[in-house]
Image (cartoon, rainbow over all chains, first blue to last red; front, side, top):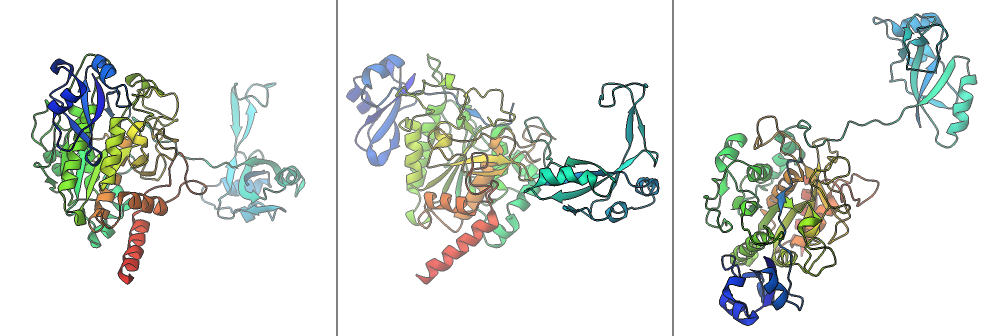
Length: 76
Length: 455
């Protein structure tokens, strides 16, 4: 899965995002949902399959990596 | 330049230097040496004569049996002094000809203890950190974190363990805490791990802060490619924190976010230059939401990382510039680590950062005996410990200075200006602007309060 971003009106729903982007339900991590990044700018993130990410987000909205993160201690 | 001067005075003087019940001084050993400022506080040291044990041996080789003689007619004496740097070659060359007893002049270089690395014992305790952070003064001035939300984004907090180790209780704000999908434990009741260490370390300076438990590192969200992972859960966590911040009254907003985690390897990310890359890309959604949360009034701190040149964590895979992604974001405080002696720990990542050149910003304390989250005798270590120590200090400041009075950017600048510089002058890539300095910070805040009162 990858991350993509989308601009939508405030209080937007995942259904609105899916419809706007032309995604099918099995291409989206519905458990993750639609996450506001910058409410003032109407910018949201969602997780989609890599293929869908490349298809629907070619204009600067992704696809973005979703790398693992680890604690910085104790040093190994 | 500091030098050691080897002299061969008369045997009775040598005997006096070597005798345990006598105390010969530098003045006893030698008169004034022209061009040398002798250090009369240094007690002369007897030095044995060394000879090959086997006749005919090489007098300059240590790779053979040797005899050492401390007999007065054999031994020599070392004294200490300083010669001018301007003409030290000439003075050093001339010294053996002065007074007849000088037989050698040697450098006396500065020596330091070995750098603290992973696996080395604790350097001091959390009580030392408490003293270094001037917590009694913070407390006396009412800077204790009261009314301040302090989010620990980590592996979850075990409040009972932290309370037991610290000997005092604290507040977990369960209602405002948040967990990623699939994490079901109650806030404050997670297994003892890294997150409990972070909470303990933040409590040192902010005992009355209200802790928000965000176990983002416990996420087990998986997908179908190597790029699946946890950063998306950090995005969701920061979105939750933004909601909390927006719900606080604007006049008293105070949210401090401590993040002791990051990315160790470029293999986990899209390649630099690809538009979807995280490590080098300010347009990545996580870097966007970090900027958005900061602009709304949150103080965001990230550990600089454990990829310092001297003893980096073995997971470090960035070939250079290991402070990556949000850990190098211009709107966060990137925290390097020093031990309780003020020396940078060898694993603390050095700048420049990838999103912002001037990283780390400041250093704070790590590698001390504290939470025992990893067992008795194991220190709170990594820049993982330094970050919440600094977050506690920021939370303490916020007790009286909400974001409406000092914006996160202004507070960062105050921390830079008041940090105890550890380099020649100003910023450097090892210590940033220096070690966060509580008394200097409080003095700056007092001046600011006085100036505000006049207006």
